[in-house]
Image (cartoon, rainbow over all chains, first blue to last red; front, side, top):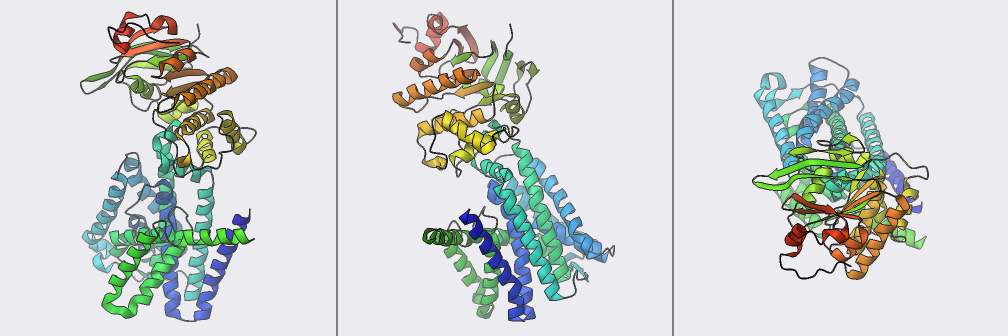
Length: 311
Length: 246
């Protein structure tokens, strides 16, 4: 009970700090950075729900992100539909992509799922270039209307979406559903021997993961006011996975911290110019080498154990 | 006579190898039956066919009056046929109680609740007090018990045990054997088991089905099966002068 309450308190402090930061900083550039960090966090938690819990690593999360982003782009610029419809539509489109890729590949064992996801996102990136007449090619889709005109307003909207998504996924992960997903990571045959339809659970989790990533993709388009094929790149998928690893895989909430830390690190290193990537990579390697369980979730759990011990 | 499981003319080929060849037998409700046979006789393949883990080439399997050939493994389990694996396959990274709970999740929640039910099963297999232990810290013998608790959580009517005594010391074997006998007496469920450890095996089962090269060569009581010439030939060797069975 104590650990439960202290987790809630920690989450409340985190949300309060995130809510107050833009007001304290009063800097529109930094608010923008934080907004992007929050959107990355949405992608990271959605990745962790499926891949972190089941251990089936998805190397093409950008497929769902891109599907959501382009859905929002098309709806707004081509059909002129209000941005509020874009988010639910993006969730539906991303879910359909999840069904199409997940159904044939999640039934197979081994690395097929990871490879299929990687290829699917790469194919979509190429298709965006090949059908440039419709997609705008490298330039992408420009002139998307902002969802909320005030920057601060959009920031709070994104923060609210992150809080809701994370809360829902954490609750799911702690329910019997989450127990089954962790059991799938343990041994699929034993799950079948327990009478569980393993394929169904994997596909359903991928759909949930995709829907949330798609919502984040739509929000990204509405924040950048533009979509380009970059949202389908493998680099984006790997960045999201890295955030999950730094945050602490399968904790769901840890990757929120991972996303914010890594976005901040990228910003802090801007002054280093061409050394930036080197320092960034070395930092990552050091974190993953010395803290294979991640940085954020394990640190919090240690802190909690110490608080619990003294209480 | 009513049967719980009816297997007829079941066959499975792997390329040129006939792993299970035209096997027919039946189980009566409440029986404890053993499957005997040297390594490679097709015992585990037979289990995989019965539980739907691999598809059969030919033949039929009727469980509780329903044909289950071609049915997905998880659906067969829900009908009431549960198995354990030859090598323990617990859910690593999870605790004992979580492992047992997963076993029951395909079933409707019992009146006392899933948590309480899992604790009862853990108690029943003699793992009381180890509920919150991570499975990777358990001894092999305890993992065997956990496998049985997980299988019982699926509310089986037929329990298929695949070499439950493998890798255990003689003391542990006697304990586990007593456990299986007790569970059978308390629940009346039908048990089919594969085993090599003849001493305990013969004491446990009421009937033995002997396989060799995928073929059923004998189906008889434990004391008679060892006098069966083809069984002696296949399992013990042609010139075995005496076999200790008790």
